Length: 190
Image (cartoon, rainbow, N blue to C red):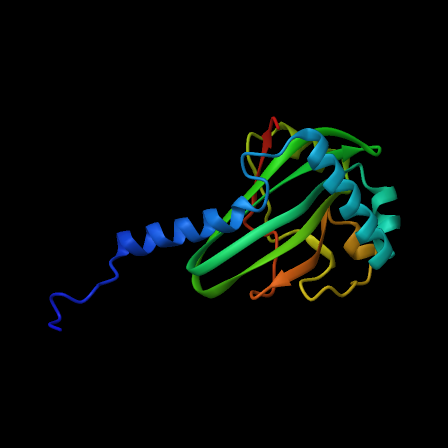
């Protein structure tokens, strides 16, 4: 077979293939078929799991002004990757808004994974900034109380002074080391 007849992977074909892979992975994550009741049910299960596996999060939740609970983030990548999920913002135990989480990445990566995460807004200012934004992006200044390996981290006074804390847990799949940095959260109407 001559080289002119052999299939070539060009940038456009590669990008389309990755978009398809990411979309396929995200389809099992409620894209286009979630409603408020389904999201709330997933949030309840996620919180119960987090509180039972990571008891340090109970005290943090009690001190938080609000919590964004993302029950299922699906991430897939091969050089380029993406992640998507839907969740709810809870204040005083009640859902007040629904959000989607979206992130993209480039670099040496291959695989897919699913995980949950919870953002704890430890100050009213941090919560207000999140709610007022049309698309809030998590930065590197977030403190972690459950790390990417699923281990509980200490919740010393230095950690608790950060305006936003995160718990990333329940990982399943072939990728490892999930973080929320660079994830964009946008309010949705389910």
